Length: 291
Image (cartoon, rainbow, N blue to C red; front, side, top):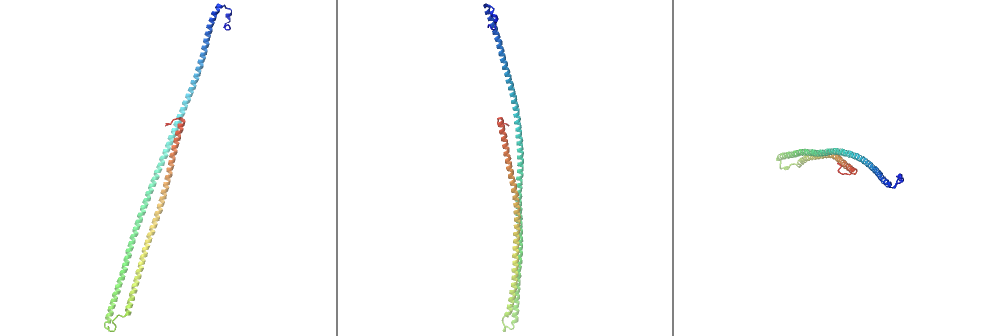
């Protein structure tokens, strides 16, 4: 206190206590002022720090708002991408389905065409076979008529020859009746000549008939061969056409299988891509119900 107040050395002791009291009061006042200044500085520093913290928090809030807007924009963009991808896949699915429907219709039409061709060829074969059967029957009737006519001619000729032989025998009998005692029988030489002529005529007719029968048989065989050739040709043609239609049908079925495989692969790729986008959104933003 003496250092702070040197005047107290020259004053008396009675006043010294008073002075000390006054000095103590002054010291207490000064200490209060200093303490107030310190507290004020402390409060000012606290306020400044709080203001800095508030400013930093405001900056962080602004940054968080900016990041939130950016994330919302990214989510909206990815949703647009997913929607566009979905529309593209749906369009591809619709196009593939239309193409598959067209191919199925083509296959159905081809099958109907093959069935119609087979039915038409079968009817043609039946008509041709019926025609050949009619021709064969007509030829058989014709040849049977010719054969019957030949037999009738031979029978008539035999009857004429027999009748002529009977007349010759009667003439010989009446010519020889006047001299019956000399010779009661017809000369053997005359009978032999007649028999030879009859046998020769019969042999010629038999040979002619045999030749006609051979010709008829050959004609029937030729007709049968021709019928078989026509049937074979028609069957070969029908088989070629049927094989060609089957080949076309097989190619259409293979194309249909390829398109179905491509469609299924595109569908899997689309599902995988959507799942990947969903996982990316879930990993990035931490929520599942992102739609």
